[in-house]
Length: 89
Image (cartoon, rainbow, N blue to C red; front, side, top):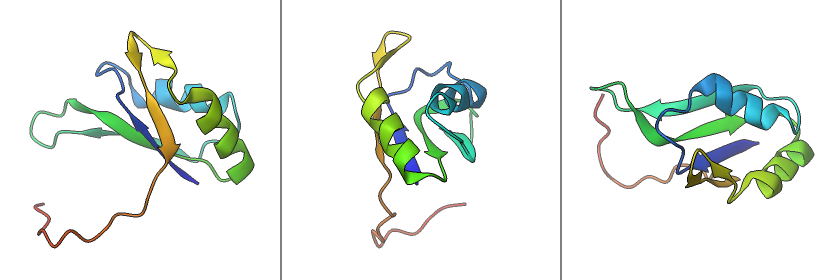
């Protein structure tokens, strides 16, 4: 299951994000989205967990948890919808 994690503190690194979710099960990947020009965190990321039950437990336990003074948002990621906008690479 792909999990969206929002309102992350800007100093959090991918290893910390992975460790947070590994308390609930196996993590295939943890990615923090960064600004392509500055390289700084954009304050959100995605975690992939292969076991849906473990992922649901992690979502339930971590949604609205405080992390470094910020309340994080954790929920199942939705498939990206086509907005009609062209992506810039």
